[in-house]
Image (tube, rainbow, N blue to C red; front, top):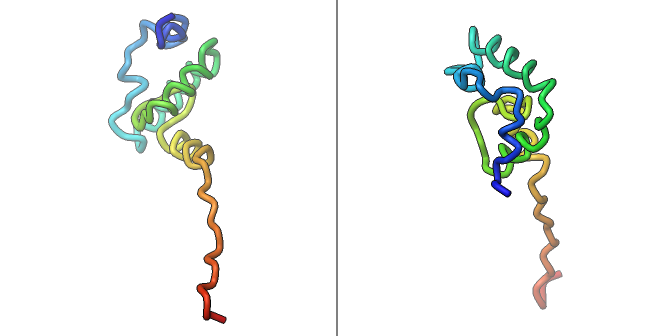
Length: 94
């Protein structure tokens, strides 16, 4: 099974990719992002698309109904937290 088999069932298949990759997330680009997200809302493969974007660090465009800022936030939340261990006092330290 191909890694991107899910993409053949995507709601965006055959659509202009530029809709999903606006030049900017501000101004007219913001409404473009919102239009792309509405298409993603009804997509049967929204979750695999988002998982792919997170796994491959897609920092541009709309993937799985999320914009780049939303994916960065998801990546931060999913990142394993490094546990810190308090330093042990050295012999002779009090």
